[in-house]
Length: 194
Image 1 (spheres, rainbow, N blue to C red):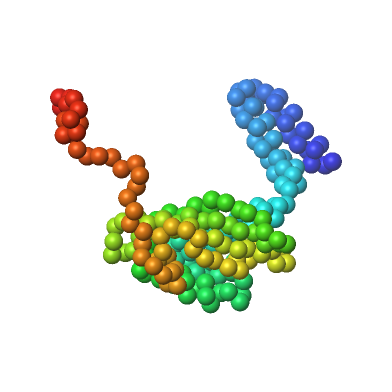
Image 2 (image 1 turned 90 degrees about the horizontal axis):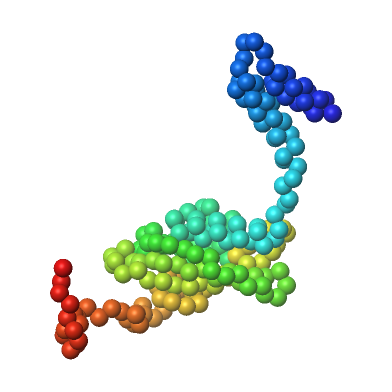
């Protein structure tokens, strides 16, 4: 009640122009008094995050941290029994491969408190320039109000993202490849080059 009364008094005083202040200064004082009172009432309106929002935040933070080689930031999001394997799988990132981009592309509920998160990762070996793309599927479980990664595997795309991947990278040509030959070589009309 005191805060409201003092705020109302400050606004009323600020609105009352005196001989020494212009109308602009009075309006500025009113806005400052109003802005000073906003933090008091605005903080109580923030709802807590839902479990799916916490999952999205955890998955995003883990994957961004691994993208930039920050295993120290990523490991707390991994279940303790899986941490050694996770560290082994991601140790060669930034040393042998460079992750160019990472996108969370889907979240699928599983049985119980488990969820599958699909991530598409664009990457290339450091000694090559061809961008490769792999899709990984991560299994997350809600443990004591925190989401933990319990399993991670490549579910599609190019192998080689993890040391345990076997096989050669795919080398198929894109279906929408443009034919570089001019139309006259195909028997069609040729247009003059400007």
